[in-house]
Amino acid sequence: MLALGTLGVAGLLLSLPVAAGAIKWVGIGYLLYLGWLLTRPAHGGGRAAPGARPFTFLQSALFQFANPKAWMLTVATAGTYMSGSGVAARAALICAIFAATCMISLVAWAWAGAALREWLRAGRRLRWFNAAMGLSLAATALWMAVTT
Image (cartoon, rainbow, N blue to C red; front, side, top):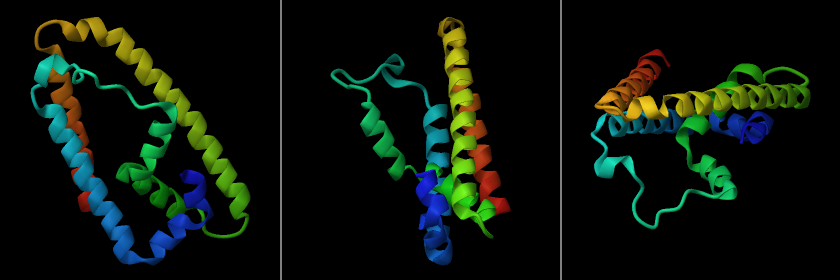
């Protein structure tokens, strides 16, 4: 998605102010919705519905194309770093940097989740943690709304 965005898709979106604005506000709304979901008490003890299966790798990859947060990132990155010459080289560098930093971030989040798993099971810790994360997400969305 980032490669497509840096090689022209984001340019198309940036050239249509209505599309760029729609992506921004849909993304902000989605972030607020996710923040609200996190602050609600977990139903069913936070367990998945009976018979629910996680996405496959391919489903997860394809789902990103429906993710307004990912489109916001793509448009912002392309709009900021893709002007001038050497577009293909710059696109490759951006994709490599994002891949490396995303891998580090995902490993860190997985490690933190595994380390906190048992601790969060005691009492209301998970509820407080989710509320803090939801409020942080909502604050980020509101910051995006007023600064862009």
